[in-house]
Image (cartoon, rainbow, N blue to C red; front, side):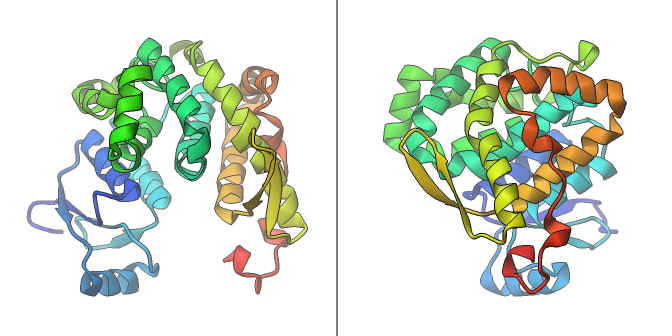
Length: 293
């Protein structure tokens, strides 16, 4: 173990994946050193981690981890306190959906982003953070995206200052709320009422895509077509989205039948339930197909 027991994060904090990991390490109150990922370092880290793309996290024991989502899951298992994911079925499933939507979907659709940002701004202005008064892991990723890909543009800052001012200080508020992160209210397994509008949007685009993506993977297709308000658009098939969808479904089974019924009762009326019930298809993929790698 290193003398000071610190983690080392290798990456560019101007990129949202590294910025998100840094925010989570801070929220977990873990000592961390930040190191720029130079080309020579990247080669050595890739060899250690078995993955060519960073960011990378070196543990105090000297292990090198890669893949931002896998690192987040590992940190939550190894350092469960303070918890960044709710424990109760409805809130945890909503946290998973929000996290995947923010990371895998929202940054790729800038033409829809103004309305989405305004709705998010109204929601967090009313609720505090995505799931209520205390921040959870999706908030860290939202802040990272805002800081690295949205607020760096002057016209975006001007727009948010006028229509969603809460998002301008979202990252600062997240840091200020660090002491409250372990107090996420799971009592009653409820979500803010203002989150319903955001979940409806997730149902209309990302959740709809998940169902189409699932079907396309079964048929070994390369793209799906989805109307995002601009007519039918071709969208590439993404194996990672299927992996995350299946993970949510498997986690739901661990909540038992009563918990699963509560989640269905919340999400099904919004149109955000069906895709989570579909069986996995990844094991049916041809191992020689690059989409299965």
